[in-house]
Image (cartoon, rainbow, N blue to C red; front, side):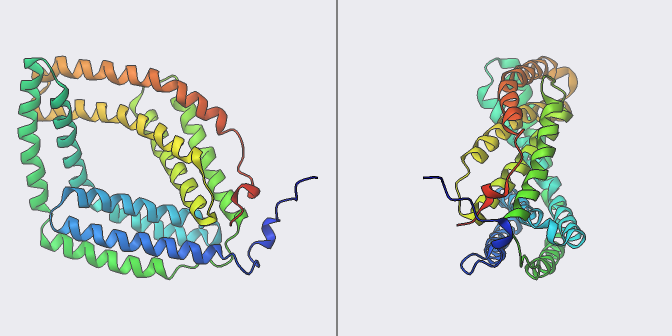
Length: 296
């Protein structure tokens, strides 16, 4: 017996048991609540709270991108406000990342010369992180919290009424094409900028796939594979950032040999990851079909 055809996307909005817009709003509200909790930790001086708050903003922006076709200009403006809010915590996160990367490298470093350079950098970066925190005083956090409260209220007023599987497929497919083009540019090259852009757009695409699958209550195992590839590309970026942190914190001469080794390792990783990049390019040829977004 032939399989029954999938329901047409145009019928989904009127389906009495499926309201993608309501599901979207519920997920959005949950991530906004999570963001509020993480901001409280950041205000208390927790580096991890800053990191998690920025990650929560990424998820919120993912939900906004998913419904972009419903009201493109308004949603673009709201998304831009979230982007600016996230950037306000950027210096804190950057300072913490530099220190974390140098400390991680210190645990792996064997030779005495390299350890000496890393320890000198660790001291400098610890002081730098403390200085950045001092600049983010109570007035900064009060203003940021006020911005967050206003933006949260604005975002919760957004409507995804009438959202269909076709809308999701269109939005996710646009992200697929951008990620694929970035991967194509990065394949076979080890330039930091192209590899970073590939990671950024691949991670965005993976998040959108995960969020779309949550709305449709479907499993998307390949999204996890894409996230893993983005993680590998992130390791390449971490090696570059470690080199940069060492140069600024401990000087070019004292860190020359160690930075050279880190660059060799970064290029080695790029070559090792290119197989997965090529495989992803093949998988990402296929356009997203509305049928793949049918909600349950």
